[in-house]
Image (cartoon, rainbow, N blue to C red):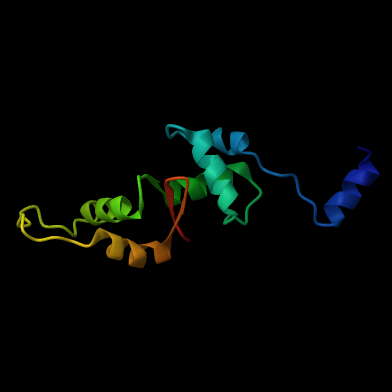
Length: 116
């Protein structure tokens, strides 16, 4: 690519595509490249800097879960919203709780991210 061609592409708004591999270089979590791939596929980042995107993932990634209900239960436990001595006869509708919770989260392939 010539300098003129490169400059013309940049002026037209073309920017180099960030790869999951580039983002994963800035992450320390297990399965970093797979998680970066999922995050990039959601299309929710406005950045084109791999280090900035890695920072977004560090801030937003909640983990991998079987389904929304399992994620809702995990989130309630992590936030301390469930009493340790909850009576065994009390049931929580985790699917319904998940519907409300998912207004603030995105899921792809079992990976959950907080919307920012």
